[in-house]
Length: 140
Image (cartoon, rainbow, N blue to C red; front, side, top):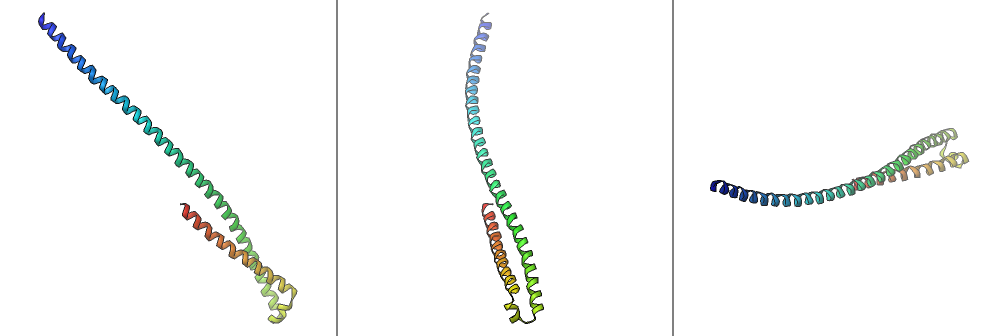
């Protein structure tokens, strides 16, 4: 009988030690769980901030590319006008013969004025295009 009592006492002590170990492990796992939840929330916050920033940059880029497309279309239209005006200018010069006669002609003067005006626009559009690409490259 004494043997049975000793075995029971030994088993009780072992269970007590096992209970203490499990309690310690349980507390440690709870702390690890809390730490993991905190890190997850921080990561989620950082991801949301990055996503918001990315969306903002993409919206800026979209707006800038639309503006660039409009200016590029205007530039193509102005270049077509410039070519037409230059062709008309050359045609009038050829028809009038001498440059002195051409410079006195009202039609020549108006076409020359149009050529100057459109040439200025084409140069400004090219400068805008270069500035646009510099800005996009800086953002990326």
